[in-house]
Image (cartoon, rainbow, N blue to C red):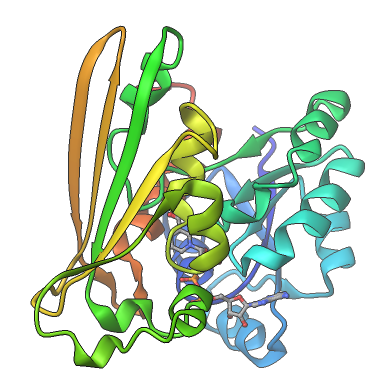
Length: 269
Ligand SMILES: NC(=O)c1ccc[n+]([C@@H]2O[C@H](COP(=O)([O-])OP(=O)(O)OC[C@H]3O[C@@H](n4cnc5c(N)ncnc54)[C@H](O)[C@@H]3O)[C@@H](O)[C@H]2O)c1
């Protein structure tokens, strides 16, 4: 079987986990190229692998790959996705928030017959939301609880001058739509974008963010009501050993999605 050529843009915690997984355990995939705004990170990662990929520009990476993985940042997504799809290639996107407001990318993918893969990330229950969305869904709410440390630096926190260090008990710090959540917390709440795309859209999906100094885990709860009944899921995420802001399950979900692409058996909706 011809192996799938993959290039990774962004060699941080998710990019590194993916590169190592491909190198060690996914025989059907060839990691062909790595790219990072910080070239040293891409070089170091390439050097650590047993089958060495090229370290290249984004344009070179797209040219050499069948599937491009974005594991960099929200702002990278629109231009990268358009370039990839324009060339009729497929893309897996981790910074899903970057798709909100850029939905023309979905139309472009349909036109070019390209595939866009959006892993579940650190969230359980998307299988049920996808099934439910075939019928009527009345409401979707995501409640995310994080240690204050994990929310530091977010535009919403800065704008509203929220002193996260002063918190002694849990506090609801944000409530709004998925659109507003992604704008206010671009690095923290990609799951709200994925949930909105799987369910009832970015305006109707409600998001609550609670900062809780007693927590060591990032906790996501989703509650969905509709024609099918009620769905409630709770995921308690430990941080990735490589980046405390990223849940380990998000890395594992990216690896699982990649394995799913080359597997002949598809489980779940
Ligand atoms: N979908 C999900 O559930 C989920 C979960 C966690 C993280 N994420 C998102 O996935 C992305 C990667 O997460 P991570 O934990 O690996 O982050 P990270 O900070 O560990 O790594 C990001 C890497 O991308 C590189 N980078 C930044 N801007 C770039 C650019 N313009 N071009 C090329 N490289 C660039 C950085 O130098 C860094 O090496 C982030 O946007 C994060 O918000 C999504």
